[in-house]
Length: 144
Image (cartoon, rainbow, N blue to C red; front, side):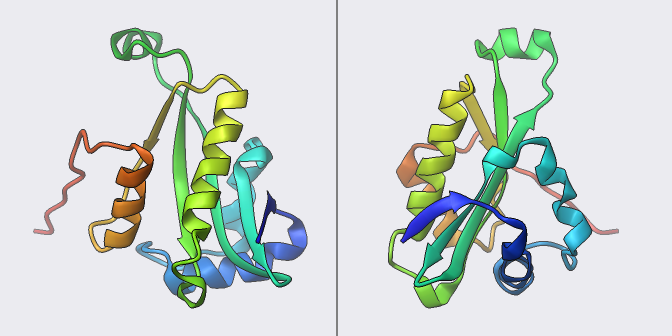
């Protein structure tokens, strides 16, 4: 397994993974990946036998100074996406992607990472907790 930065020729595989296995409310299109240009170092893929088996993306979060002070941190990042093809499950791909992105964030001075984990992504929640993330809020909605 190789963890490397996303390349443009990974786009089709990335779109397949996201649309097939991620928990989004609608389809993801190529234009949705434009946001990754703001911090390309935070867009990583796991390659196994020449195929993209998983990916992760994170970027900096703009947090007001008063909140940073209250949280006692200086630079915040968020993990927007982590998805692994289930055909490659139980190989540690999600863990390796997450650890590598955390390493990238540390190198650029991030001292707090936020993320949202869909309720139905129980294995992802387990992974995040195993790495050291703790629940501090619930994102809720009600359709009326």
